[in-house]
Each structure stands twice: as C-alpha cells, then as structure tokens.
Length: 336
Image: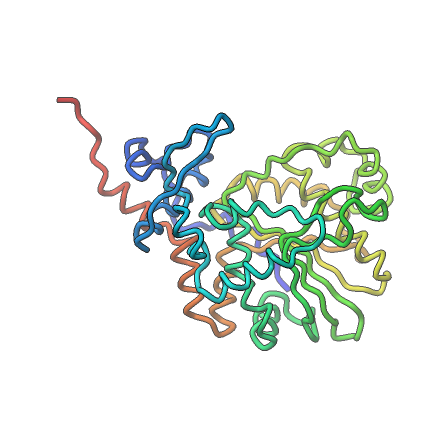
C-alpha cells in the first residue's frame, strides 16, 4: 500500500494565472479563488459547455443572482447531470434519500455545483456500492492486501453525530468502507475527498473534547500543538481522531486507515497534508494517515477494469488541456 503524496510535486504542467477576460467569458471570475480553484472552476465550465449544458446561478445571501459557469442550470441539475452516468445519479439520489440521521448534505451543492467534492466522491465510488467484484478490484488496486472482503460503502458517514463517545459534533467522512481483513479481523478505511478546497476550516480550539482527544489518542508528536485545531489542519485532525475512536470502539485488533484524496495540482491541500504529516507520531499501533492523488485513484479505476469511467473522470476533473488551450489562444482585449 503506497503513499503517493509526493506525486503532487511531479505535475507535468504548471497551472496558469488565467486572464480575467477569459474567466469572464466563461462566467467564472471569482477573485477569492486560489490558482488551482480558478483553473478547476474554468475546467468545469468548459466541460459543462462541451456537454451542452447551460450555466446556473449563484444566489447571494441578499437574494441577488448572477450567472456562474461552474454551476448547472436547474433543469440539468434535476436530470442528475452533475454525475457522470445515469446509474451514478440514481445511486446518489438513493444515498440522499436514505442518509444517516443528522447527515449534513447540501443538496443544492450536490446537484448543481460542478466544483463540489461531494458529487466527485459519488462519481469515483458509487458504482462500487452495488457491484461486489468492482469494489474488490478497485480497493485491491488502491490498498493491496488490506481487505479480504469489502462489505459496505457508506457516504457522508459518522458513527454517531453528537455522540459524546466520539467527537460530540457532526464531523463525518465523505466515504466509509468496511469489511474483513485477511487475518479475519474487522477493517475500515475512512476517506476524505478534496477537489478545489484549500483546506481552510473553522477551528476546533474552543472544544475541550478535542484537546482531551489529542492527548488520549496519541496520534501526534505534540498533542498540545495549537495548530492541530486551527486553520488548515483542523479537519484533518478531527477526522483522524474520529477514525482512531472508531478503531477503539471496534476493538484494538481492528484495522483502520484514514485516507485523504486530492488532485496533484492542488498545492494548498498538499501543503496542509505535508504539515499535518510532520506532526504525526507514527506509532505502529496507531491509525495510519494515507494520502492519494486523485489522478492515481482515477488510474486505479481504469486498471481495475473500468476504462470508460476513468476516461470520463479524467476529462471532467484532471485533464487541464482545455485551460491550457484557452491560454494559448488568448488575445488581450484592446480598447477602440
């Protein structure tokens, strides 16, 4: 089982600073975007146009509306076109209908927002939920020898929202995979998926429970470090602690992994990963923190036998050649 976080340093082409007139043409001029988020937003808008879909609207808190190219129109959203196949859309609808009690699912983001990592999670893994052979092949490619058998996939999963035995809040994993390890013990993989996010999250430093857990779970070299519960590391710390608590509840013989998936070019996400990794106490009895580049997950989907889905995922999320072409073709506006 490899850790491929270094692959983010090996991106073939640096993503550009896109001229604002190009962004305006595709209705994606968002000044708060990082360079990666800007290029990803533009890529989603070009993909939407290629698929013949109309842009949607961004609605501000004041009620004003504007066209946003990285959103789908209501008509396309209702048809499930944020998902790469009708089967994936159907499984996403079912997951929303049968969501866990207390699960926080922003349905507008799920159906309309092309940049959201929640539909990306479904596009990557939903078909594994109903196909035993598919999930066995994929997870054997991604995590060789970890599972003897994968029994269940759950989206937006938490073992107990608000439960004081865990974090006492609503933290959840994008995907939770449970099964049996080769030694016959219970095994799970808890996954967080990122696409354009820069990892900035509300801090948890005001929670006495979190500080109690950083000490008790002993995942970190310095459990008192303030940065574990603030800024770019708060979510990684929270979900890693939750994975450790699940393993404790299941029994120390259980096998567990906490995994983050992010695109190789999302520098902000990988900066947080490297910083977090530097703070870990890598004891053999802890829950390992594993990272995978999105590109490698897509390649594994292809290697596991679904070349068509892998090609669709690559074109949608990781092939930035349309962005590079727009830069090559760009001619600055000139005033008359």
